[in-house]
Length: 367
Image 1 (cartoon, one colour):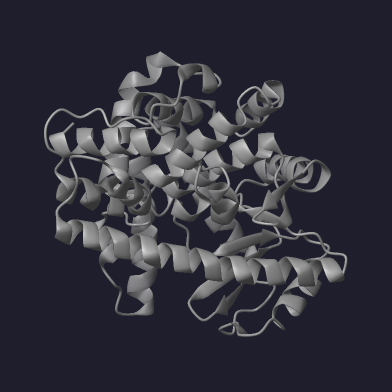
Image 2 (cartoon, rainbow, N blue to C red):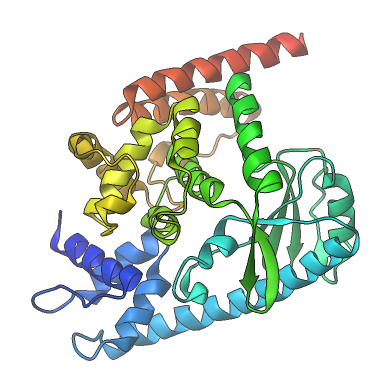
């Protein structure tokens, strides 16, 4: 681990848990903030830097930090206005949305406005999906770029630069058996046992504690498999575990992890949350120190790929025609396979099997 990485994690731990910064010597803020921007938590670190009595950034770097904090706060306030309007409108028509992902996860942080996020995610379920989409399109400024409502797991509405996703389901699962298992978890955590919390004066529905922990990890795992996972997502999981420590039904959580074949990834990510983010080991269910070697490989992939910014030269190449696009997509499966195989070989093999079976099934249906 480089000096900059050591300093980055020391500052991040201090920001997450409100602890003194444990660093000897001067902080290389330029290098630290470069890592933080790559992993989507630079505003959280900027707030800490602005409050430090010594080891302050230079005036130039501090100015950029303050601009990032201001922009994030304005983004937060505008999204909050949209969220309040959306929730009130849906409730007027007896639809109760569940707040997912970024905006909901921000509530786990000491200062929600410091957790960076780009959009609003509202789960409404299959039954109310079409009506909810129709209603939310009537909000002032709402616009859809021509996407069909029945495409994908969610429908997008944009309010200028502020997007909202209305979810019929919270996640896409390739394997049909796992999809059925996940649907039961979703029913339990989002429809049968959700929580009600105060969100800056408005009561908001969020997932149950067990589903909040499971889904936050599952979402981070999905990012690892697709667009790259950053330390922001792992911080979210750590904050969920810390917030709900002692309140989670651990038997239910274990059942969900085992049924989705995720215990090994869970323990590997968990090792990094304890070792790098400072989550107390007693707050990490099923903590396994023996994952150290696998966690070291996972660490390298996370540092290379970052938050939504997978450092993958192959994926940056743009096909020129339809044939090249098909070949590019097909070969991309193998690129992803080898990335996964280096850390989780058995899972990579399973996913490759799913991909080929899905492809064959689609081709058979077309014929």
